Image (cartoon, rainbow, N blue to C red; front, side, top):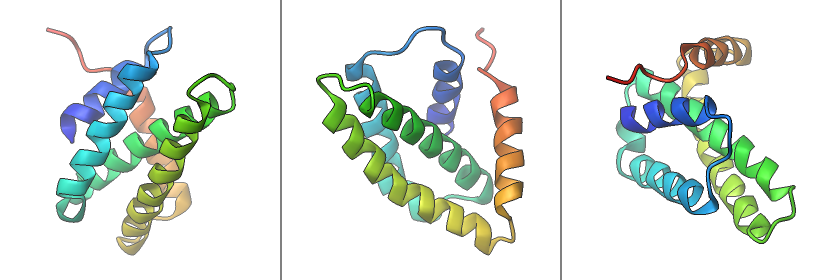
Length: 118
């Protein structure tokens, strides 16, 4: 999950949009990781997973509204990610975090930016 978190930070700091093929590949990797590890994530990884899911979901929704040839595919991606977002947010809620806490932490995560390239 850490590698996917590092990659979303790279994507969020890019000036241009990635292709549908790359977006779909990243989305599928996220779903695969969540499917394999979703129930066993520690608190830090729940935060990072929710950050990833929310960003990919929001981006997919934006691309779905652009009415391109893949609009329906983006819409389905966003819908599937919505379930994970609810699941992960609920887990943070059970740990005592409020929506305000989540929003504040996301802002910090956005400020972290892309990892330094060696």
